Image 1: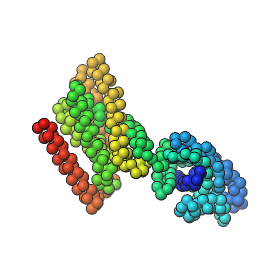
Image 2: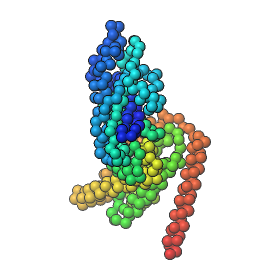
Image 3: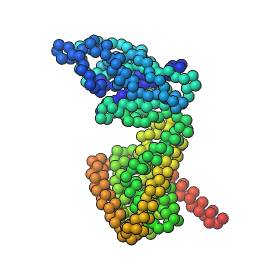
Image 4: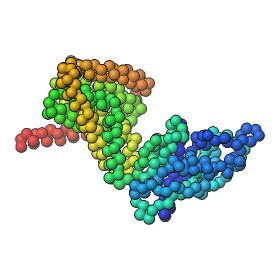
Length: 393
């Protein structure tokens, strides 16, 4: 795994960048060696600028007002030892950007490669965004981006994201994320399929989908507000429960209980799936800037849009299947049996993963659980009052 550090600083009409990457990630290079087989840093020095452009400058893309900035100018390139402290701050890294490495008995795979770059900013530079495309450096790449006191930790294949997002930019980003997450989540799609499989009329379908939506929205918000256990066991436990929910619902469809208890089961299992959605959201809240509420709402809207898109694809196929190929009841049983088989294997595999974690319940977990219970009681009271008012009115 390779770790890349990117530090940015806006200086007038320039954006300066310091990039640090492991030298061993620079491939297809015949490094010069000394007589005793170690790296010859002096002989490599003239080639550093070419390597800096190819491996550090070209993958780093900056944007202002939605438009890409021009290619950067190289302001320095140097080799550094693992213990080098230049990157404790941008100012220190920039000051030492061309400092030569001295010493002997150097090994290439143990060294770091520091590159200083300058981008020209337009006079009206407002919204700034970055796309650090360093995925090609290694099989796994983690990139840290620092700018104006904020730090992002992103995978190597991350798409462009704003450095200081407005609420609109944050909303658009998280809507897209929620939409993609639901369509890429096979387990969520199979649960949704089992949920609507036995339903024949529009009103029951609306009730089931609404119950599922309300439930996972509640737990998604609770998880975003850190009202969940902090133990490492919690995510695999939720993944196990998601598999169990699919298996249970598939078996309910086979026995005929799915249509009878659709909304209740949708709400109960929707609470579990909301925690599953939150795991994708939690790692990405760093891209929300100061717009946590907007990001949470936008992600939820994206998930709902993804659900509607999935239903728009599922329902016509099911209607055609039950009218032209097989009788409805038999079709429900056959499809549910296939889903149950898949969910059973997921359940077994996820149980094996969960069994490797140690169960720990901390004081913080107790406090968070209490907060969650209190929030649930308030929500229940509000719902009860609303229904009472609605009926009396």
